Image (cartoon, rainbow, N blue to C red; front, top):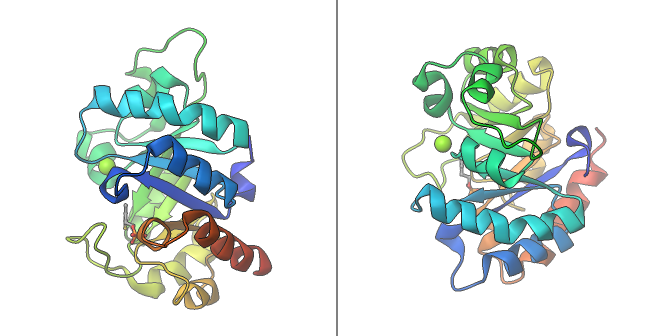
Length: 223
Ligand code: TZP
Ligand code: MG
């Protein structure tokens, strides 16, 4: 599997943007386009259906060496053998957790699958980033940078938080929220080298080509 430290482009199979596409076919396109991590985000589905989708996508990501991230469902991530799960502030700190190890200890672990589940945490402000790093997060989300229809109620954190993250966050971190090919240069100029992109890729006419265009520009920005 690709190393997290080398990841630049974090793409999504978000069920809100499928528009009739088969999830595993979309996952293949995103991997073919150069996504380094792939998140399964299915806000409206119950855990059992998330699990079935994860099982259908995992062979695709494994063949491509792309880490699969399960949003919101750590037990599903562990059960299917995904590399990561992603949780928001409210999912993790709001549930009374302070350490990733507490979360993992609370999950029943199949004996052979996913012995080391990495946990990514969202952050919206410096203090949240510090707490997430102390908790043992494998990576951080930094955003939403811009207002976005994918998460319409979230308040943008602006590029100033991206600039702070570039100077202070010691683990891999991904700028997220409203990032497009039109604003990527200013996100890079603020110091981001890794980005999460949902709608700008999933609404593009050719998702694989959209990934390629993001990836080329991310790789041409020096780390
Ligand atoms: N968390 C913060 S912003 C966001 C999430 C899941 C949505 C990102 O989607 P898009 O379409 O790339 O703005
Ligand atoms: Mg969540």
